[in-house]
Image (cartoon, rainbow, N blue to C red; front, side, top):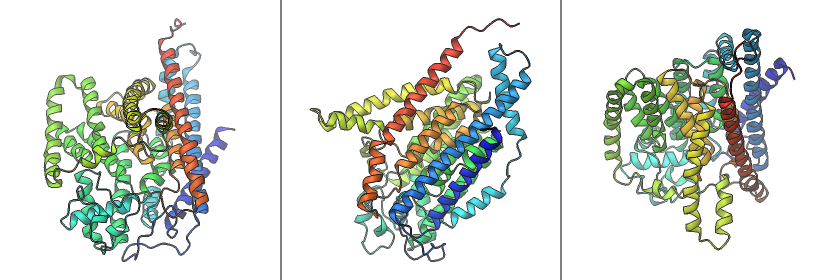
Length: 513
């Protein structure tokens, strides 16, 4: 298959994937999309509601087409860049270092020269997203409920939705298994949820639409920040803007992780010029989801390598900026912010390889609690190993700036965490994807794409209600018995790729002609 044919096939697959995702988004309530009641002044749904089997097929097709389409575009761009680099390299094919430099230079030149859409198509997609209702989970009803409780003077970290008056039209809409669960989100997330509740009032659809607006703005902000950070537009749009997996999971799913990821990226970009301001925005990211503190660690590593003389001053400014927002937000939220987080840390999701390990251990003579302890320890060790492997694979791919290095370490740390964590969901990957476009092309692109595609397929249709028994058995079978092995294959692929990269780096170079 030639590059031009491959490029057209990739573009067609991506376009069809977007169409299927938007179709599910505008459809009526179904197994992937909870009903939100009267629409009020927010957009409504089509009268057509696909069956559980049909919506599952549509979403599986969308995510598989999207993953395949993005992969084709990445491979096409890589081969085009390699061909151009080979042309510029002349007859010095034996000079490995020169070939590598030429490949990267060719890739960057190809991306800079490409004529990709500006803001017209991203804005049209944003409008399209705002005409849909969220799907893929019922998390947005949880957000609305926690915001409703906070806006009415309650404590969402202490009061579960089912403990609120049953007559409330927002809190009563929360679905199993979250009705009796208090909030796990940070205080800034709660503040935004309360803001959406205040604007939306007692109407669930209006409240959710306000939340969707915040998510869509964050998605557009990421694109703007990446371009400001110097990432090539073609790469930004391939990996972020026109990536159906990111769009379907993050934007159309309306997950809080996208807001936190946008704040984390903003912190990295701002910190290059003003560490205090970067700390302030980073504090908002941590106060949205605590795991997004990875951005702060990435900044420290970057400054240690690039700003050694001013390291202490920058760290102090970063910490002070973070404290300015973190402390007041947590005082406002109260002492129970981390209660649910502590309880959730021992969970093991069905689609991870750790579930197979846990079931094998707990199915024998070992107690379930002991098995969970072993899985927790094993996941920490594996995460450290993955940090080392990903650091090897991304060496030389980041721009030689503090911002570029910070973006690289965001990818390394967040990808290692999501790959190794016992409890991991597809939207947890978004932090890695907001920083990935800053890096030059590499095998990490395809590794993370493989993981995201597998996890997206695993959590279709996404709700625990509204399915027929046949669809439930099929989708749970894929989640429990197929996807864990796909993720395990990604683990193996990562290990093999990093080992080969190390071998190439340590191999003696032939003498220059």
